[in-house]
Length: 92
Image (cartoon, rainbow, N blue to C red; front, side, top):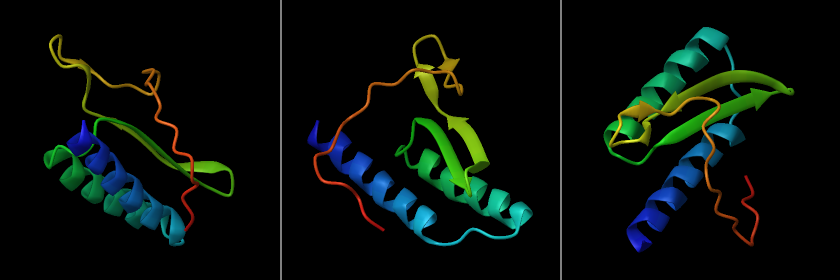
């Protein structure tokens, strides 16, 4: 449980860095984010969906991993996840 919590915190921190820096050049942004999330996925630190928006418009949306590993059912944009609520907000 603790290991999963630490992985979640690491991922949250990494994502916060992406949000804190201005994303430019749509093509480069897509490629950079794909590369970043590919590494995170290969390390086993990601299973879910990612949505990054700028000026209230989605600039990156992709799903990774499996919703049901036993059935090899992939995660989709419609997959429902149980959320963990953290008391203190994460600030960039």
